[in-house]
Length: 210
Length: 355
Image (cartoon, rainbow over all chains, first blue to last red):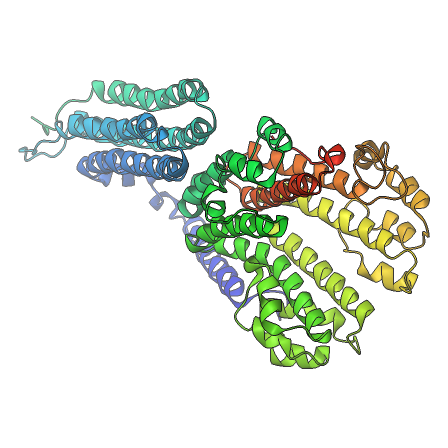
């Protein structure tokens, strides 16, 4: 049988093969019995509530930003702790790396607050208006843009912060030079913030068909 | 992508090890040490280094063996701090580093017991980093099979004994063969383990371990001139690693004197530069004047590789490199102390300065 496979990889391959074959069967069934139009992506997207899109966007915005900030803080912080055992003078100066990481989380919070101000109750009996759908989509993608760029920015600042701490412990003059690199890294989060504002700038509050 | 999760387990320890590295003695300090006249001067100069707390309670006059023992205590204290604060997977790496010392301890205990030395003295001479729980039970040495089945099968060295269980009796030659076989198995195992750790640990440790394997190959070759070790046995002791594996090893297995060894080594660019000026009698200092022996040159090449491993962050090689650099520093200090205490100042500069 699968002589060279371990049991876990065998069951994973079996599961993958099952899922793939069910998907192929379903697709061919729809195609060959003339029901192909039931696979309607656009209709599906329109049936989803714009609230769902908007709220997903807000939660990605704050959630991913905080993950990036925390990740960066632990990367930089553990190196600062290790280096400060022998060279205590680096502890206060290198807090600036931690602050740069924290700023990333603050960007996420600000954008989440700005986005959530656009969410209102819809008091119309005729459903959502086209502007509402636009608001939902733009909040989703804007929030995702902010969240992902803050995640990566937190990582970049954390890694360079760790490098800065280790170099500072060895030679004091290296700190400012590596700090310049860190500042360039933290600008990435700012880019995400700007794009998020631009994308959601034209979105109006939820109102429904008037 | 190693950087994003390395610091979770080993970030603090890496900071600590880099702090230890910053405490290594620099070249100007070595110059100060060489200008000391007595051992007390040397102790005073060492009071500004990391060894201060270990040396301050020693009564004057201090012998070189005491100095060496206290410096090793400092090294062991620092390494044990790392081990105590380590979790998986960094703790496994640190354990692997100690297996080399365990092998030396095991061989020391077996040899000492065969020569009917006192158990307590033997245990004091063992290297503290290579201590494992059942080690004192090794003093009841009869045959290797007995030792293995009673004591060593539970130790971390169990897997390395596969190739030497056939040694019949424990005489002088066989003990050395056992030591080298164990070390060969250890090096190959360590190399395979480091390759599984992913980049950049794998490439940095690979270079260092390959140099170690080459050094062992050359040392085994040179030490076997004039003994009753057959050429085949010698070839079996070479680690299956390194730049010299497999072509140069087959040639080295058949040589009979230093000239041929030099000729083979010169074909490797990195070792050719090392061989300039090495004479045929290569023990440290005996070649007259300030020339370094072949062993010293291997040490300086090793120091270069170990210094380079600190240039990168987020890998485990710094732990191994720091340990080797610290050992080199202790060798240097003991060399300088010996020269001072024996008043032979002409060879005092034969140390390998690190920074």
